[in-house]
Image 1 (cartoon, rainbow, N blue to C red):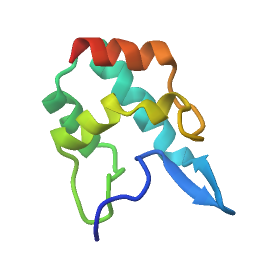
Image 2 (image 1 turned 60 degrees about the vertical axis):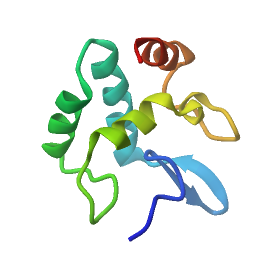
Image 3 (image 1 turned 120 degrees about the horizontal axis):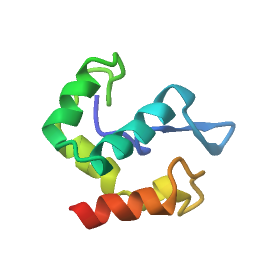
Image 4 (image 1 turned 180 degrees about the horizontal axis):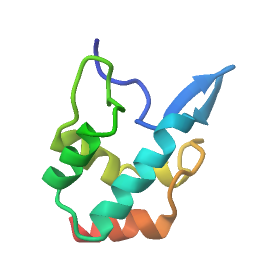
Length: 96
């Protein structure tokens, strides 16, 4: 399987970008853990225990986590519904 067409946490339903409910809490927790001091490696280790995959045939890695933590679409840009606050994203970007 190739790259995701949408960021983790989103899906297209009836022609509209929507939040994928089973992934939303994971996105929020990735931001929360990182902003609380967890490393990429620690977040990846946690993600591997959650039973949610980035792609069906691929395990999580630090690059996938980094992509989430720098993606402005998670705050509602480019017609995406917001999953995290601008403050959460800003804190993550500052830490990087």
